Image (cartoon, one colour):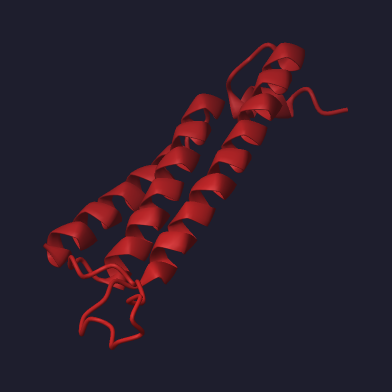
Length: 115
C-alpha cells in the first residue's frame, strides 16, 4: 500500500507543479489545491498506513495498548487543511480582483499592464 501511495503522491506533486507553471491564473489555483492535498497525503503516508488503537488513556490508569495511533500527523494535517483553505481563499479573491482590473486570465498579458 505504501509504495502505491508514494507513486500517487509523486504524481499529484508533479501535476501540481505543472499546473502552477501554466500561464492561466485558474490553473495556478488548481495547482495550489493539488499541492496542498499532496502535502497532506505525504504527512499521512510518512506517519504510517496502519490501523492502530486510539491514543486514549484507560480510566483505571492501567497500561495503554501496545500499539497506538500517533495523533501528531492527524493534528498536522488538520492544521494544514485550515492554512491551505486560507491561502486558497486569498488567492481566489486576489485573482478575481486582478481579472476585474486587467480583464485577462493570461499571466503574460498581465505583465503588460504594469505601471
